[in-house]
Image (cartoon, rainbow, N blue to C red):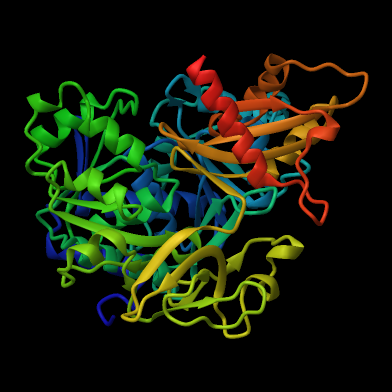
Length: 551
């Protein structure tokens, strides 16, 4: 632990840069940055933010797809001592406004495009007050903390309410801050990542320097990363999967991070070309994306032999998918955002195939896991399934502005263990086996979707709906498909198209139901206690799906 435990992000990155300042840190297309250049640009932007009045501890939002600008902004926040808040580029304008308000964002960095979306236009839709404003300083009544919006793609701002990142950097570079922030401490809040849970709205997870550095350190150890490794970034940088397992992990080892300019998950030929051309040694993604890469019709035309290191988000079949492709060093895990990602990893010294394939590893050093009866809190014996709880240096501080059910007294037990809501057991040797989720969270295409959030949306945004229930059902493409059951109010009529049109207008694309079914009031399946039986709804949805497929 000594190599990272008492460090901060800037002190750790500074040591990497001093060892080999001319080493490539980031490559994207024909652009690249050395470690020395990366830290210098970050310090200049940090100074520019300071000159705009942004101070340590304030929240910096980054609404930007994967791009080399994003790591620069990430390290600039650490240099300034601000809290880095990445925002999912697939949210709707309605959701973006909520995150800016709930997260108390003081400065927002915005990219120009994500696929066919103009992100600046999204911001104007989220904040229509900007259209009538004068000058580049927002003045929005219900967003009093928001001071500045920065056009972060290097081009001239498309609207006069935005400032240019180039201007910000040029101003700051004239009097840059020292990159190493001596005022920061390992326990200081460094990140706030939004994640969906069992509540109706995304939750702001507050992580510390120590948590994210330790997570990155152990991932590097598990993957046996060195300064010679070349990591291809596929997951989004607004997830811990991209931010910690890929970016920070490879940078702490002095390796190079490669970013794609035109990555299309539906046609991953660019991934194949990049792995061969750049001799990529490590990359990973959720199963559906890995499957598209490995089963691409032109895969045999490319030499992928350099790709020898990867993560397996789940054990068993997920592991097999990668192993069949010849990836020799695979790491299974159990992770969640509230742990800065990993709680347990299968480390290299474990050679037994059944453990490497089927378990989720042992808890990290300094991290404790216990399995309890979710009703009584009683600690269960090895081999007995229950709720997974953990504590340690990687445990998040708490949720930002928590709802009543999210306050520390509700989410941590008396010993400081976090109640994950996940199901699993420990074996006699202390290996963890993850078996599912108690929480009603739908895992779809690598995203977490709160069933309650979609239910509340349907009931509040579509006046003709009397009842709505949302479940996830197994899907070969998405992992789980968001599936909605609705009851229409008497005297009202609604069609599939009407409901889905509202969803597409106001929800992120991954939250829009893939399946939508109508029920009459008497057709809802009820449990003995009078609750709607979601297990039966899942079975009904699968039966209907199978009937439609066979007809």
